[in-house]
Length: 203
Picture 1: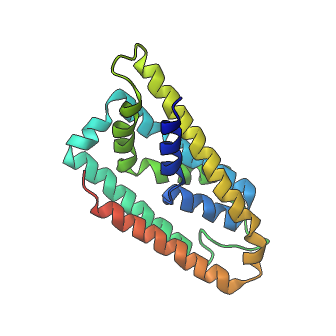
Picture 2: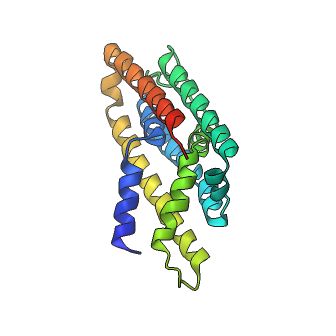
């Protein structure tokens, strides 16, 4: 495993994006356990993109305007939904001591959807992985699976770190309603900005 691959992957994973925002939101609203579940869901959402890249299906997204645009705008719509759900009172970023629990299944499903509905992730894998697999590699498929697994592990570890940090400051947020209001607005605005960025991206 090359240091270059690990560093590049770490930079990509740690960069703020929809998965990071979702995990932070889970940690702030429901605590450390919820943030770990959210991180797990986001990590699972990488699998379809990884499979697409390895099997060559990502090439379809790269060459087919219809396929790319369809997935892209589904992603935009979901990000706007996340923004609305975060912004509304009692929505996705409701922080209180007695907040109603949300099932692990629903949290994982949301995390998976967040990453599935991002066509750029497939194209990232399609362009990223081959750089670290030699054309003379006798077991190229195994090598790509190995690298992809490491990328997913890094994603889970980094996202859990974000989530636990958010959970650690949760008690301070609970006692400060105005802080929660501004955080809710900030998260909602960030989801809208990410949606706008995705809408404006080209293949």
